[in-house]
Length: 69
Image 1 (tube, rainbow, N blue to C red):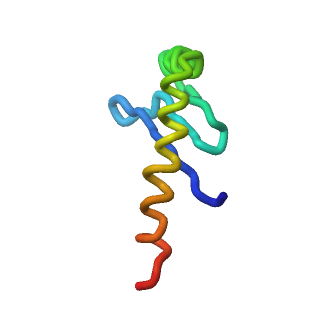
Image 2 (image 1 turned 90 degrees about the vertical axis):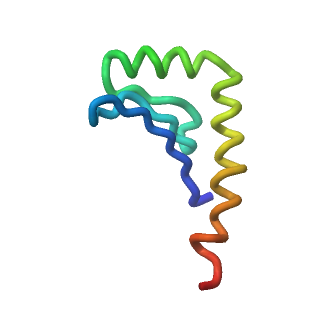
C-alpha cells in the first residue's frame, strides 16, 4: 500500500505530465501536458497498462529495496 508508481514525461527539463498510481490517472502540468493527460485518461488500454505496471514493476522490485541486506 505504501508503493507508488510514477511515470513522468519531460521535455526540455520541464515536466509535462505524469501517471500517478495513487490517483490512478495522468495529471498534466502544462497546457500541452493537460491535453496529453486527458487523451491518456480517456484511453482504457493506456490506464490499464500503467496500473498493471504498478504490480509488475514495483512489487517485483520491492524486495530488492526493502529486503535483507
